[in-house]
Length: 391
Image (spheres, rainbow, N blue to C red):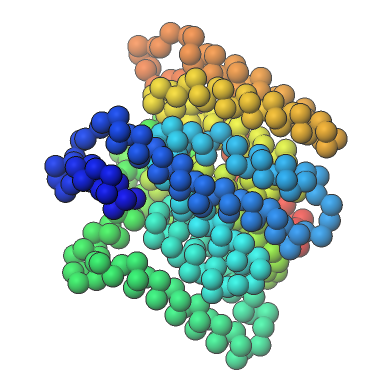
């Protein structure tokens, strides 16, 4: 994108001198590159995934795949984070979906390459790593020893080759490689950012984690708790590596990472949102409510970015479409009404009530706590379905 932009205007990406440059033309170009990335990666990846869904489930889904595509592409959180908050998450999330489609079609080497690229693009894709790893291990354990070893060697080779290609510009200096890994694992950047709807933020008013433990200790504590919460779905996937179970495990484990891992930001919720949206044909109510809760949990961030108007417009348009389509498909919409009432009440209170001078972050904490409660409910349901119901 930088090379292409330099052809239009060389000053936009000139080393050092372009720092802090914010002309209207540059902003328009940068915004258009996000839109282009979305159309090249995430949107076609969703379409490809849902039209491959029959490989996951042979039963009649409550929600047709065409409607699932519409809901996934129009999910407010995905649009607001990339096109409002301005980021390129659609690239890594699209690569993850392409990798998922590859694994569902038994193209394991292709899936490994695509997922490696997703991780190297954005380290938050580690949220999706464990289910893929245990799914592949389960498939290998179910095969003959000789073919399993050969398959493992192939996967290791393509992973190493992808690493070398991506990291080639940095391999000449060990300090450069180390700096990249420091960026991928930001231990020194804190336990969480702002008011995120996860365990560490919500519990911090009751117990000041940062005051009692060093960063390294907190990182280890987060690691152990996250692995513990992810263990049951991963072991089930190891014993029964089915494609449908892979989808449920992805949603469960990635949500466990959001709730319990280290250095989580509000917008990180879009990482578990993707596998939750992948369950739309099977779990439409869960996926739609998850999408709404993700917007609610990011309201302080979006409001700070002056995106209150677009957030409300996108969210209520999404809900109107959900109500209309669910009604046409004979699906109950009662759970959506509860979400709408709660969403409206919280946003209204946040916008209308005066800020408490003694507790300036009270509303943000209330929203985080409410979001956390919903996410724990989704996690509990997904964990139950993954471990005890899905085969």
